[in-house]
Length: 129
Image: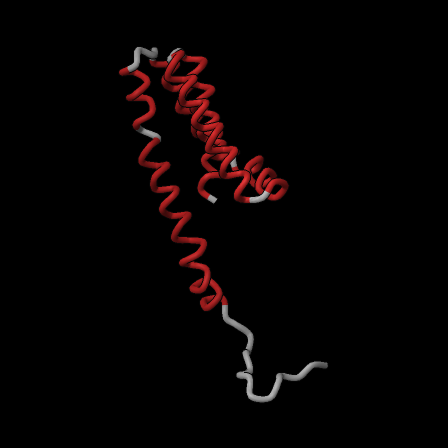
């Protein structure tokens, strides 16, 4: 068995409340802010699509694509970050976002907008973490 070093304060087992309080600034607060931003953005996407001339089903499909990729995006993002490292992943996804946004701006048609929205939804996770 091990004993505490002399002079060091003995730590007892932490309670669940202490663990949750210690995770609040590093885990819960950023997650809350990120999902609040996503929730604020979701109603705007179909309105922007309608202003750009998309039909109602196309605008709905665009919102669905954004929601699905935002929900499923952490899976490939986590794999990429673990394989390439955080810094390289951030640079690569930033470049991919710029290219996707430029392509969507140049083409501005439903397929390019859907591709840009799905790219943004997936890449958002790498840029945020």
